[in-house]
Structure formats: structure tokens, C-alpha cells
Image (tube, rainbow, N blue to C red; front, side, top):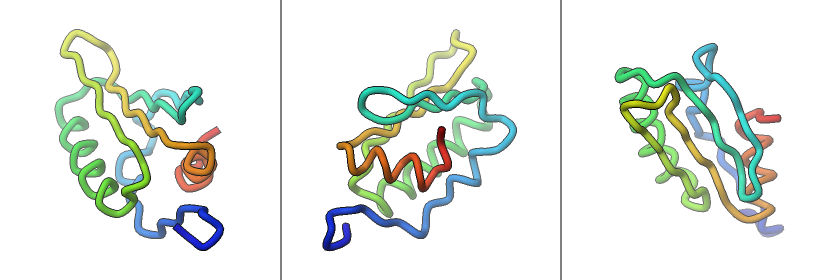
Length: 94
């Protein structure tokens, strides 16, 4: 975090998973939920991205929710108000 307590990260690799396969970005009370199609190959990509991102940006809370019967894979990015602003900007979310 910077002296102003604003988190910074220049190494995130969100582009590796955020493409035309992304179905929906949803703002929640605590951050954002991103829905992806439930595809086995995408689960692996998301897990790799989360592993990297959690080391790069430890201030982010990241959850991966997968249910074999669901149509979507859910990735939840959460944090405090400052982190929520970072998520919106860094990941180009609505």
C-alpha cells in the first residue's frame, strides 16, 4: 500500500482470464463478483490467476466458487472501501 493507504499493483494478470468468456461483473456490498462459464479448462486458468494474484496483492480477498451443476464459476474479489476502488480501477469493472 502507498503512504496514502491506497493499494497498488502493476503486475496483475487479469487479462489472462478476463476476455469474451466473461459473462458478467457484479458490484456487491464488499467488492465484485465475476461470473465465468463453467468450463474445466477455465477453472484451471482461474486457479492459476488467483494463486499469482494473492501473492502479488495480499490486500485482496479472492474466492473461487465452483459447483459442477451450476452454469457459472464465481470469482469474488473483496476488501474494504479503498480496496473496492482499487478493484474497480485495476480490473476495469463497472
